[in-house]
Length: 338
Ligand code: MRU
Image (cartoon, rainbow, N blue to C red):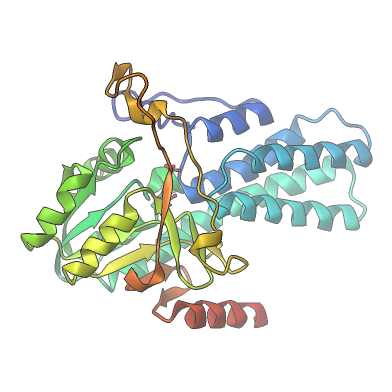
């Protein structure tokens, strides 16, 4: 996988040879972004299974369970990680129930991981197509963090909407919040969009309000790490501030995410676990120290945007409007009945 810590200066690839490498890659942000973490975990479980020396299903099952636990402990907020692990567990259970051998289970897990990957690309494309319909003929779009191809198996969610709009012939220009402290916007979103030839302007996070007030932003679209049953949305720290500013200026605020990001078991945003990351991400940029020794540091990696600030949630199943507790629940019911 491309090492996202090194972009845009260096395009370096990291090879994961075993489950420990995969867990470390997720934890240390070699790979990040909710859907990408989920796909990576599924592939990690397939890799862990493929490398297993277990001769019997009993030992193989114990190892698989341990691998699931190890990956589940890497990052707490993005629900896609847990969703993907559950999907791999179900594939494993189906194979075990059918009396499959260790080798057959390995093949089954590999196939399921590939399906999770391919589904994610297809879902992002569908999100892009649904979202494009919400973008006017000419649009200046603000996004926060990176919800692009790097954060998914490809194409992206929020950037999927932008790509979908461009493909549909809209004239789009993007403002990318730099996204302190990890700089996903400046480093990753801008890198992706510039590569695609989409006009991009990087701004520091504290500029969004003034630019909205000047009338230079038509809509906001962001990704999500977990969407609670009532529509409250956890996403990269700073998203909440952008949503409040958007409301103040009458600008539509869209969340784009695959259905796997929706966690109907979590009633509202207060129940979403928020990852607190290492203070060094705040005190330093690379090796440059920005804050003095002795200062206390906070580094919550995500915040929750209350559902009242969200205009619509764009998924591969369509666009959902408030009240989200109704629209999301009825979509879940409709899909369960299929
Ligand atoms: O800490 P990160 O970089 O994993 O956080 C990523 C985000 O918050 C993204 O906006 C979110 O995962 C959506 S990615 C399609």
